[in-house]
Image (cartoon, rainbow, N blue to C red; front, side):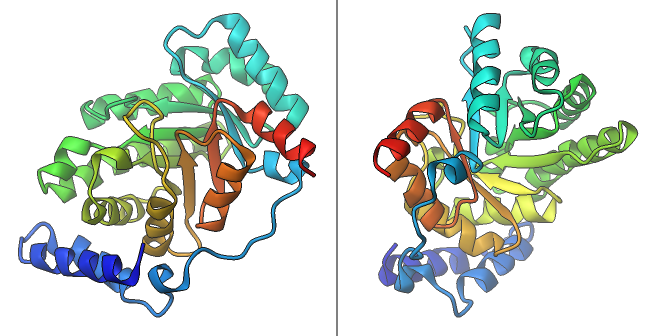
Length: 278
């Protein structure tokens, strides 16, 4: 984003802060945007290209197709173990199989909640989260209540995320582990002010990450969205870029703009490309 775009975003947020429900969210977003470190003027960070074995540790190896077979899930897990990916992300019906396959490894079983549209009641999402953790998931990628966000019902969107966070924390504690919650914003469907506010919602609700995309919308991760998300959430919060990250160059660009995790289905090809170019 250019400095001009950054200033326009700030102006757009200021125009909306008179609404009662919006005010605290917009004020928090404005504080982040008006801080001294503005990526609109500084550009992406100069980060060295990770070695292939290091790049793998940033990647959630993903298979979320509704037609995914047991054999495809087994292959995903085998690849995740072989390449040392951070997590293997699968649909809820495949969590138990994935957790068994990854037992004793450093690869984390991950699944999705309210996927792909986020249009579930909070109680249903919370139940999904609880069952997923009981089945062996240790990271949950949930879809934000996009309708509540678009309607300006930010406290409802926050309550939706908080329901999943609470279920994940309580169930995780019951089984003796910490469960990460990543909030999928689906940035392809949002304008920049909505993206900024969604990041504030995720932070206020106690999540651990914000994530760009489901991978099922018209577009996926964009570097400018990742940079904005990083600016809003700050340095201690997770940012995951997913959707359309298909090359080592794509992955490195997302890391340079502030992502610390990459979601990809073509993870093996990314690493092999990185190895070939080393």
